[in-house]
Every structure is written in C-alpha cells, then in structure tokens.
Image (cartoon, one colour):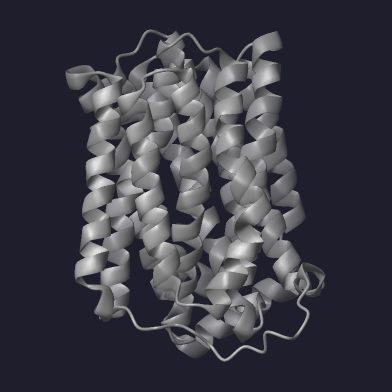
Length: 390
C-alpha cells in the first residue's frame, strides 16, 4: 500500500532529522558556542522554510509530490555531509540553512500525501500513524547520536546520519512507482492568496495551537541538551533523556483517536499544554538523570500529541485543492518559531541563565491552553459523535 511505503520512508528519514537537532546542538557546544550562538543555529534552520513553505505547498498542490521528496532527501543528505567534511561552526550554520529548507520540502510533500491518499474515515488514523513514525525516530535518533558521539565523535556521527538519509533516498527511487501521481487539475490562472485561508477560523485555531506547541518543542530540543550538558552528563545519558520524550510521544499518539473521539481535538490540545507547562516548571529543579528523564517523558506526553492534532485540524479545515498549502502554512508557523524562539530565548539564557527559559516557556504553554480550550458545545458534540460511533 502507498501509505505503508510512505510511513516507512518517513520513519527512516526522521531518524536523521531528529538526530540532527541534538547532534548539531552538542557539536556547537563542543566548539565553544554559548546559548545565543546555539539559538542562532536553529534560527538559521528555520529562516528559509519560514519564507518558502507556502510556495512549496502551492507546488505540492500543482505538481507531483514525489519531486519534492527527491529534492528534500538529496539536499538534506548534502547538508549532513558538510559538518563531516568541514568540522566547525561555519559548516554547522551552512548545514542548518540547507537542512532546514530541504527537510521542509520532504515534510510538505509527505504530510500532504498522507491526507490525499486517505479517506475521510481513515485520515485521523493515518495522520496518527505518521506521527508515530516521527515518534519512533525521536526515540532512535537521539539515542543513536549519543552512542555514536561517544564512540566516533561528532563529525563522523554526521556521516552516519547522512548514510541513513541516503538509504531512504535509494528506497524511494527503487519503489517510486508504488506512490501514485498526485497532480491535480487546478486552475493555475486563479489568483490564490494566503489571506483566503486565514479567513477560515478553524485553520486559524489550528495555526495558533501549532505555534504554541512548536515553542515548547523548540525550547526542549535546544535547551534540554544544553542544560544536561551543563550538569556534566555524558552524550549517551543526554541521548537517553531526549529519547524518553520520543517514547512518551509514541504512547500519547496512540491515544489520539479514542481521546479525540470522546472529547475533541481542542480539549486534548488544551490538556496537553497544561501538562507540558507543569513539566517545564519542574525541569530547573531536577539535577539527576533519572528525574530529568521522567520530566522529558512527561513533556513527551504533553507536547507529543500537539503536532499530529494540528496537522489533522489544518488539513481538514482547508479546501480540497489547497490542502498542501494549508499544511505549508502550518509549517510556516513552525519554522517561524524556529526563527524567533531560539535567539530570543538564547538572549534570555545568556543574560539570566537557563531556568528562566523553561519557566517562560511554561507561561506560554499555559496561555496557549487557555486560548485553545474548547467551548462546552464542542465537547458535547464530540461526546455525541463518540456515542454514535459506539
């Protein structure tokens, strides 16, 4: 089935993507970068996708999504080889710029394909499977990177991730005919504006929820490794702590279909943000690997379901012929967070230390929970839908 092949490809590639984030952070710290410099590293990762995501979505709506997948996988492989060939901060910054742009192409194409190749009845389930593939990679990627750093050091670990991504590219080429052509009959003379989509209240709500979740995810992925490194933990311990997040995200994403069937997507999102806020408050008080692993697990339970829920909401809210553009708008918000959040909070960390970063993020998540809290009639509608299904 095309969906199965698509999920396998995503599972393989996401190992490199998830591993890259912690590897780039730890290598930057090893090279002497401070919180502000590491923040700028991931701002560079997000700046080009922030500008180009919507255009990539329009391409995906008009042309074969497989082309974007080829470009994304090939470009990210090259970006991973740059720090291997030229170890240093300059190569890391160039790698982040190229890697952010090319992984965006792959994500736009694959998320749109999941929606397009699914029926209305199977779409929530298939997006959950997609998010489970991402969760699996979030477990494997950091742990693999931690082990490889301790065994081979940082530059060769980039080569390991490049080899994994290259294997994914070869599998896509070998099985390219298994994924159907997704070109649609779209009137290209029609002037399409992002404002048309933003006029849809359901889509605006999905983007708002996604922005809050991405702030939490960015700060976790960037500053949890920095914080644990400051406590003197080994790369393997840091990888295991980060991997606990992926385990929890995997668990919570299994619960998405039954929970949303009973309470609705907005209720699950609001509850998840509250749980995440509480975990962020506790992080600066934790000094032991086991306690930080538990905090990482709780954060995974909360933040782990935010991305798939916002994907589902964004796809369902869009007109059928503009689904990829809506997915891309969601990614624009995500990459906008990559651009703004790391340097801003990096400046806070440089001035005040790491604890205020985690506590400020908790405040943001608490505010996001209040904004995304569903009205009573939405909960009642979800309960009624659950009764009908049963």
